[in-house]
Amino acid sequence: MNGPPTTSMPELELNEISPAIVKKFVDVLHKQTADLLPAYGILDTIQEASMPSGKVPANVLHNLEYMSASLNALGVPTTVPNDVFQIAQTVRNDVAALAES
Image (cartoon, rainbow, N blue to C red):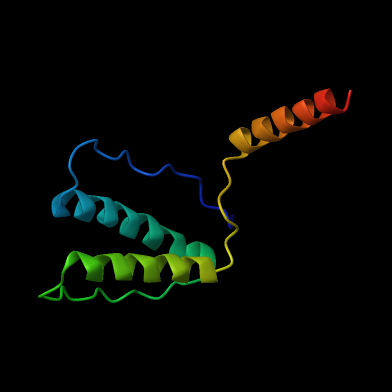
């Protein structure tokens, strides 16, 4: 949508989640989100936020949920895994046709 190429989410490491893993993942998301700004006509320099102290994981989760809601407010359609969805629809339609016959 709006021109940028589609990219995949980074691979998640299959081990116990630690703050370092979450930070690495969020840093990638931050960069990918910043790369979208020109596609939405946002050309001003975004001021970096200072790192707050005294935060706990619940604060991080709250901020990630806030960011998700903000992205949804842009009106970007919900991502649908089209191939999987289309195959599931085909199977559903075929099963319904078999049931009718």
